[in-house]
Length: 199
Image (cartoon, rainbow, N blue to C red; front, top):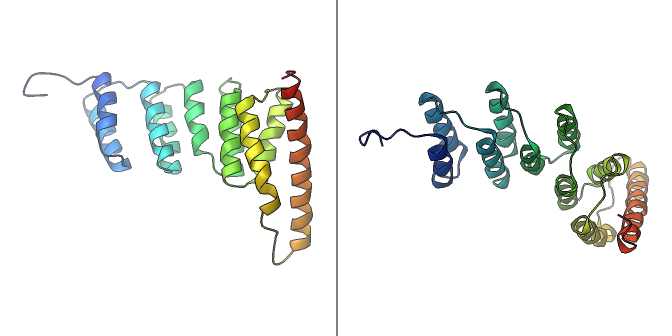
C-alpha cells in the first residue's frame, strides 16, 4: 500500500480484521498498526473484535477490548453490550455486566438478556439463571418466544442434574431443590403469559 501511496484508513483496518489469523496476537498487531498510522477506529470496530474473541471462547481477551475503548474515550453502545454478553461465564461476570450497562445509562433488552440466559443454561448454572430471570422480572423485561424456547430445553435437563456430593451435600441439595422450585415457578408464569399473549 505504501509503495502505491495509498494510506490505510478505518475501513481498511476493519476489512483486514476479517482477513488476519483468528488469534489475539494477530489482532493486537493490527491494533498496533492502526495506532502507528494514527487511524481512529470507532466503537463498531471494537464491537467486532469483542465478538470475534468471545466466539473463540477467549473471554478475558474480549473484556480487555473494553479497556482499550476506555483509553480511547469511546463510549460503548447497545451493540457493545450485546457482544459483551457472550463473554459472561460466571455469576460475577453477569452481575458486573448488568451493572456496567446501567452505569452507562442503558437498559438491557430481551435479546441481551436471552443471550445471558442461554449461557447460564449451557453451563447448567442455576444460580446465574435465576439471577438473570429475577433481573428481568424486577426490570419488567418481557421474555420472548426465543427466551421461552431456551428455558424449555433447559427444564428438560433438570431431572438429570448431578446431585451434590461430599461435605455439606444435604445443605447443597436443599439449595439445589430451592433453586429448581424458583426456576420452575417463574418459568411456568412466563409460559402461561406467553400462551395468553400477555407478554
